[in-house]
Image (cartoon, rainbow, N blue to C red; front, top):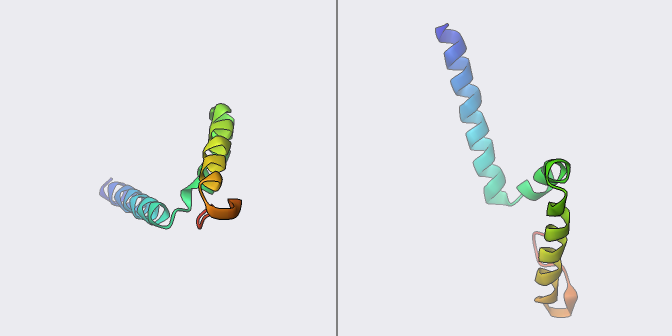
Length: 67
């Protein structure tokens, strides 16, 4: 039983470290977009609006770094 608890703790700790790394590098948008489209279809429209606003605020309508 102790081995199972230790293995679970290691897996959960790894998930936390992975989540921190994804947030720092800004890679979460692509991973979460699939889940958002399945469970929250309106998220795609709102994400498109936000990206359009970001593009309109940049010179020449170019994509800013990270989009």
